[in-house]
Image (cartoon, rainbow, N blue to C red; front, side, top):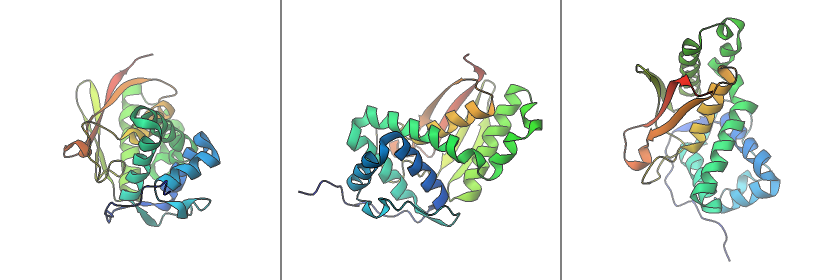
Length: 215
């Protein structure tokens, strides 16, 4: 009996660097354990990654469709609610374990940044995160600002690439943004949500972050 879902999706031709994929897989493994991760990769039809995560380099070789398929396999394995919780945790842990030291995010740890007013710190930190992903990968990210909120926009979203859904499903991205704000703001929490999703037919995946902290 074949207990995997074979890759029936088309490659996107857009890529994450190997390092981002590796950090995300390591975060999944810390949450699920080695056996759980093996089961997930088997289900996703990605057996070649078992005990052989992508190398820790910046070569753009991890296709967006593979990243999306990995997240789809989480939902198949644990159901929509369980998959969402796992992807959120993995996104948060991925940022904490490595993405915060990635490219333009490094400057966000500088003392001058820490002394900025909170709303300016949010603006600078979110922009640095967007720039890091846009610079290192084929993802397009940027931040818009409104009176009471920031809108973090992802075009060519690797989390939901090629998928179809009735609503937002980019839970890993929401986890990364959540942990990034937590780290950059010194532990403050903010109301945020994904409001549009390419998988649901929207032109981009948009995340709203309200400026006023909730704690």
